[in-house]
Image: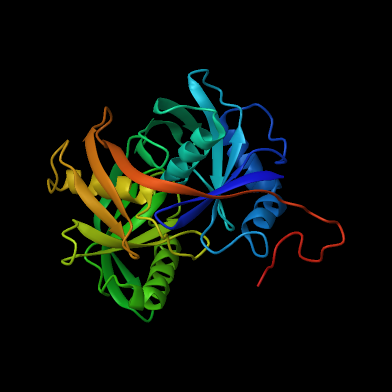
Length: 310
């Protein structure tokens, strides 16, 4: 299996160029569901140790259904198939440029959540214009066992988020274990109460936001991903969901650019324009770097060829 690894703001992306399962030629959301339902061994073996690493997201290249798109892609981590991935799209664009499959300029990429646009500025810098993002519910209160009551917004940016702003814990690297415990418990509490999307969609990510007085950024976040790892990047779909919340509460005007940071200090430049269906069209600018180009080998005699399950 031929793969190229990159990282976007510290968050790794593994682009699978060949060797993935045959998902057919249906719509990308149907192919993504096929991957989720029938090929867990594939995506877990690619993401889990010893081949993968904590926090890594996979990007499986597939044929797009829209001829205007340079590729289709299905994203996943070790736990779930994702609708969209912002940091992964930046990493994918940098990878396609590295391969010579695209040039600098504007390109469309098809994802299960919809078609997104990338503006490739140079070998490392990419702007992603995401799908329309929405705040679904504001100020939803949840009782979280062992943590007390929290209040947050439910929003969609390509994945489903519960966003706590401000975080009851300082968003610092020293607090990462405590932030993870709170976020996992919050996600579990939300899903136990069926707090999520309008059609029963479960919360798959939790964001805890706090101020960053040192750099002058708008805010810094801790983002819990479905595999219980934290996002080293500021999270593209999470930033999109957060922009929708800022717009809905009149805290950010269209076209006004802000800096959103991750818990480790990597940053996106973020802004939005009004969407056609009451949400926002987010644009996120970040940087990615190629780390490795390699061939993964799955030896039938390897006891850990399907990954290490703990």
